[in-house]
Image 1 (spheres, rainbow, N blue to C red):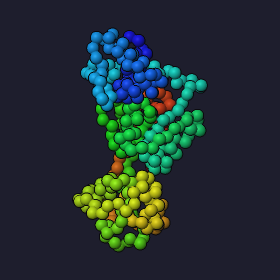
Image 2 (image 1 turned 180 degrees about the horizontal axis):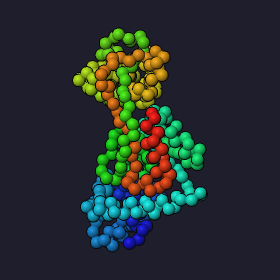
Image 3 (image 1 turned 135 degrees about the vertical axis):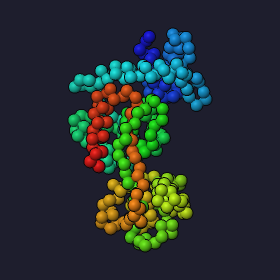
Image 4 (image 1 turned 90 degrees about the vertical axis):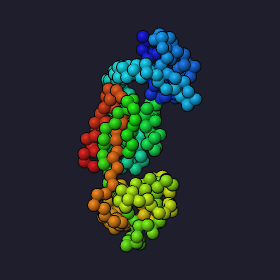
Length: 282
């Protein structure tokens, strides 16, 4: 069986789309389609079901991907060995956590020659990009589904309800809300776990960066639910105050995800191990 056909097959399986796989492989879509059809002719059975929004693997397709992908990744790893091997880590996750925890932890590897390209995005887009091959490692608060991606728990962050000092003593339901999205993901979760209900107010400020939400809280714009690591200094200095102190604060768990078999690549394995080790000190 032609390894080039298997490589194309695995790329399509991971991307879920002939078009996306073609872009990743640097081929035209007709070329990718032709290679998949050639492989299907060799096997005598279809590997994918074509649909309007992409392709879905058949039972045979799933079985072949499960067996072939780790070996192809291992072969690819051989090309990454040696002093002149390329070593670029494509990383994705939430901007605040990457900026303040993940990227600094990778500093020693960068000093040793690793190149890093970081991208920000919501969990769904980030995990989709990982499966499609656009990223090598992702940090998300959601676990990936299916067997194509593997996830390792990385770190638990405590969520804190904070506001500027002018709001000290005011009932939380009476304070304007600062959030990262109109759906109030942080506030809704906090209210549900701490108060057993939903928030009454809509957002007064919506900004898709928790660091900006913290700055708004410091300025007195309202309350925000933030990771403790992000606002710990402001709490110690009194620039914001904790609104209520629940006995069991809400926790959000980050996971570090990779494609199955990708840790055969030495530079990815080193980055993965470095982050897991660094998280024990966060």
